[in-house]
Amino acid sequence: MPENRNISDNMRRMLAEKYELRRNLYKALCRDPELPSDMREQHRNKLSKLPRSSTFTRARNQCIFTDRPRAVYEFFRFSPIVFRELASWGAWTGVKKACW
Image 1 (tube, rainbow, N blue to C red):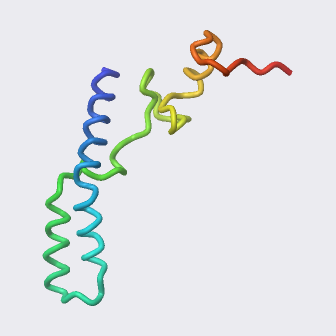
Image 2: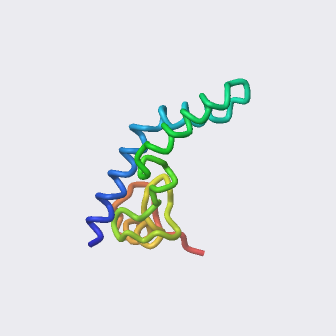
Image 3: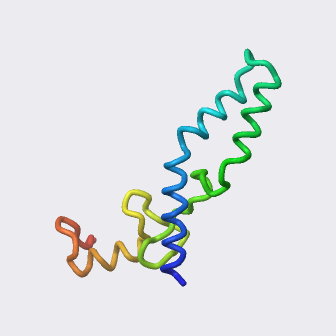
């Protein structure tokens, strides 16, 4: 099950990258007050016909090892629990357990 979530999340991210430029263009044209209302409506319809999963809000930040959705370091894409385990195993150079 976790592997499927990672695959679907990756597919959402790829789809969002693919449609990002088009989605931003349609949004900007919908908000432009200088355009006639029928043209804005056309662009709003085009925006609604884009795939739902093509927006970045659908992509969920999850740990790539455990699929934990909360407390995920966005840069590394894994949870503090996994980060701590990897650091204690010495899998990362320059990272060590703090002692105080």
